[in-house]
Every structure is written in C-alpha cells, then in structure tokens.
Length: 351
Ligand code: ADP
Image 1 (cartoon, rainbow, N blue to C red):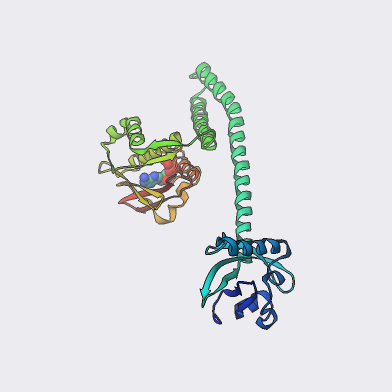
Image 2 (cartoon, rainbow, N blue to C red; image 1 turned 90 degrees about the horizontal axis):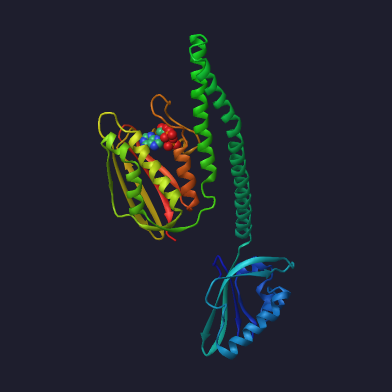
C-alpha cells in the first residue's frame, strides 16, 4: 500500500477512515494522522455529494446492494485546499475477521479529462470546418457550371458556323477551347459528385458479394478489353451506404485495370478479413505499382502521378474512395511495390 501508485483509502462499516496510504496523502493533502477516524464526508467528498454517500452506505447495510461497488466509477473529489477535481475509483467491500471494510483505489484523472474535452472540441471544430468546406465546394462547383455552359455553347456555335472560314490557326484554337471546356466540365462534375458523397444517404444491409457482381457487370467492357482476371474470396454483409460502396469497389477495380502492366493482362484479387468488429478489405493488383513517397499523395483531390496522355483520368477516384471509407468510419491506404503491383486496403466497421 505504501508504494502503490494509486491512492488507497479504507473505511470501516461506520464510515471512519482506517487506511490512507502515502499516495492518498499526496493526492488530497491531508496526512493520515489528520484524517484517521474521520468520515469521508468531512474530507474528500464534496458537499453536494455527501448526502448521496450517506444514503449509499445506509442502503448497502440494509440491502447488501451497492451499485458503485466493484466497478470503475468516475466522480468528483475534494482536496485539502477545497479544490474539486475528477477521479476514477474502484470500491470493494472487504470482510475481515467478521468486520466489514470498504477499500477504495483511486486516481486523479484531471489531465485525461482535459485531453478528452480538448479532443472533443477539436473534433467538433474539424467537423464544422469540413461541413463549411463541403458546402463551399458544392456552391462553387454548382455556380461554375453556368458560365462554363455558356462558354461551351458559344464556342460550339463558333466552330459550327466558322470552321474553315477563318484561318487554320483559328480552327486549332477553337478546338483547344472546346477540349479545355470539356475537361473543365468533367472536373466540375467530379467536384460536385465529391461534395455530394454522403448527402441524403441511409445505411442499408449490403451484401458485398452481390455488390461486386454488379460492379463487374458494369466494368465488363474494360475487363474484356484488357483480358483482366478478377478473383474474390467470400465477402461480408455490411451495414453501409450502397451507392457509395459500389463506387468505392468500382474505382479500385477500374484503377487496377487502368494502371496495368503493358506486357501482362491485369489480375485483381479481392479479399476481406475480420478482426473483432472491423473488416479489412484488400484489393491486390498486378499493376505498375506506386513509389513509396507517392502513396499518400494519391488520395488527395485531383492528385495524379501521370499525364493525361499516358493514362486518362482527373485524379478524383481515390479522393472519392477516401471520403466513402471515412463516411463508414474506416481508413484507406495502399501498400505497393513499383513494377510488381499494389494492394489497396480499407477498413469498415461491422455494425
Ligand atoms: P485517376 O485514376 O483519375 O488518375 P485516382 O484518384 O483514381 O485518379 O488515382 C490517383 C493516382 O493514383 C493515379 O493517377 C495513379 O497514378 C495512382 N493509382 C491509382 N490506382 C492505382 C493502381 N491500382 N496502381 C497504380 N497506380 C494507381
């Protein structure tokens, strides 16, 4: 007891203090001699809880039932200088030589509580900022559509009515503008879709085996054209957002086909393993792989590692995947050996 890291305090059946170890002296400021024989209500129990404590003791003596006994409880305690602070404690009844004692093992949790509060505040602030940001992305992309539509349609008119009538340079410039406007439309659509993920969706039971079949049917052309092999183990039934999960599977598989090795048909292996209540999915491919220093970057919005002439795309696929996985309370990451292949992992909580 003298060297215990927790404060240990024992009281007898009448509530008088009988044990008060050095850690209790340090925590509360009273020496054992000062509190020996005193009641807890005269020392560490704050005034507002004193009646409750007395009733609890009386109740235990009458019924043998003590709801706060033998389990971890968080309460407020009082020290010698009158300061209240949070503690956690376990109280156990001890029967010794026909007498009843209660022993409490307790520790100061002020710092933990502060950290928890700070963490909670931080998470709330972050959630609020994210919401604002998403709203901004939605509004911005929505409002950008209108001027872009006007630009596109007038350039299209220009092309239809003046192609071949201006000089060759002008025709080329018009083509560039049309192409750039098309790309911009795709980017804006991507952004809008990104900001819509998780809006107005409800959790439903999703059989990932069925989901995979649907995705493979949708990707049939790409699979056939590339002679891709997609293998899968038994996948779980989850409570999730169906449309979003489908998009997640689709993005990962189509990337594995797109970023294939030139000289061998792509192969994708999909498995899921469960540890406690968390499922970890693995999408393993035999593609070109990703350098270690770029493995975090690829999940950022519009980040790409290749030019459009090498591989088509806007760089939003994996940002979508990240948002979808996080919507389900999970994480996504990649492990890869350049030139050999990549495995994309994500976790989803089983609800
Ligand atoms: P996009 O496919 O439109 O380029 P993504 O966000 O889906 O955008 O992917 C971002 C980048 O990550 C890709 O440009 C590519 O360089 C890399 N990448 C994604 N999936 C794979 C994969 N399976 N194998 C190799 N590289 C990949």
